[in-house]
Length: 203
Image (spheres, rainbow, N blue to C red):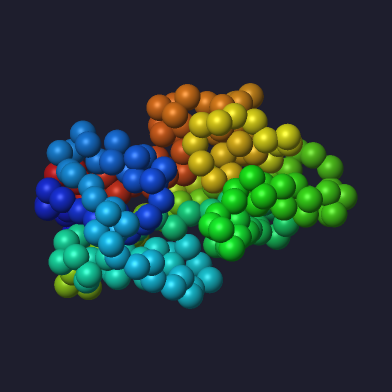
C-alpha cells in the first residue's frame, strides 16, 4: 500500500459539495485540495459499469493532467427494490439539458419504487469508492458504504444529491436534515476515507 506523502492533491471532480467534504476530511492531515474544475480540466467519459472502474478513469485522468496525485470519488445510491438502481448511473438519472436536477432524480426513484408495489421500508445504501492515483500510474482503491431506507417526501436542505430521501439506519432524520458535521462522520464517504487514511496517511 503506497503512502500519500505529498502536501497537495487534485480532487477529480467538478462537484462543489464533494470538494467541501473532501477538503474538510484532508485538512487535519495538512493536505491542501484543489479541484479539477478549478484547474479547468474536462470531465472524462465514465465508461465503466462499476464504481471502481469509473473512479479509476477520473483519478488517472486528473493525475496525468496535473502531474499531482489525484483523488476521485465515484459514488451512488443503490435501492434494493430497484435491483440496485440507480447505482453507478445515479448522476445520469439527474441529467437534464440544463445540468443536473437531483430533485427530479429523487422523484424518479420514488416513482420507480411505486411501480414495484413493494412495501416499505425500502432498503437502500450509499456507496463511495475513492481512488488515489499518482502520475506514474499507481493507484489505491477504497470502498465505503452506509445502509438506510428511502423516505418520501424529500426532507432537509443540507447535503447534496439524493441526501433528502435517504435515512441512514438508526436515525430518524435524512442526510438532508442531519447536521453536516454529523453526516461527515457516518457517511459512505467517511467510511471510505477512514480506510484511505488508515492505509495511506498514517505511519
